[in-house]
Image 1 (cartoon, rainbow, N blue to C red):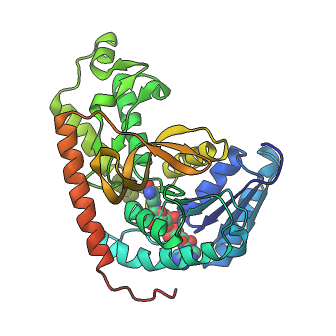
Image 2: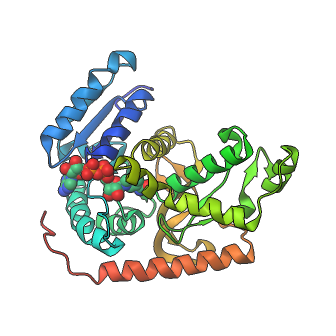
Length: 324
Ligand code: NAD
């Protein structure tokens, strides 16, 4: 860590928020981590639990706090909200999480002085769009983890399939963090080689269309399967989020599939979704214009249509308890 006080505020100290705090502490990314939750005891308990292990990680200040801590924060991460209950639609989830995110954004903006707002709560693309609008911040200063987790799952599965170190596997899921997401097969590469070339080099048959579909289905259902087995997902999303935080804090200009409000790239306007984007200490500073195959372009077009119609549905909904 460099000189001066660097700070991350995490709103929501549930499974996801607490695990992000722990991951940030393990990587010693900042001097100060603040946890905020409507359940103050939960936030305090998580901060205490992480602090009790700091002698094995390094000196930092992990504590429970309130919205005034957002002042001078490098990153504010929103993880508050609820998970989808069995049988619930995405709109049902939005109905519960939109009012929560609105009141959180208003509270953040009372104290905001600088930094990036990073949305993790679901539906992440819709909430990224709305928090960007509600905050009034320059476009890109608000971003969401988007398909970061899905890209991570995609890379994991490919690495397992081929038997190659995951750090050599580059691949991007784009579009929606949801069913309409799509893989950029054309940009997938392993240490600079195409997927097919790598398969040949490893003495295995190139993936058939059926195998690709199966892999995509595993990416899409991976989260639900983890939830079915252990009740929630939090380790992988915490790693994804901590990695985005490192990029922001170190101003690395790394290309990541994160969600932001797109205005222009790929001819897409006024919707938040994930495309490979340059991430710096100012948030998303550039969204790449991709060379897609015809099939990928058609997939992205239909994803955009679906996302826009869902966003319109969410915006047309009457919300109770906006004062929460
Ligand atoms: P959780 O129920 O364990 O935790 C949510 C926390 O938010 C609780 O501690 C609750 O007290 C708090 N909270 C609720 N309303 C609040 C408010 N107004 N202000 C402050 N705190 C408030 O849930 P979780 O498993 O941690 O999941 C949190 C969110 O993250 C969910 O929306 C989930 O869908 C999402 N998630 C996103 C991804 C992704 O890839 N984007 C992955 C996993 C989970």
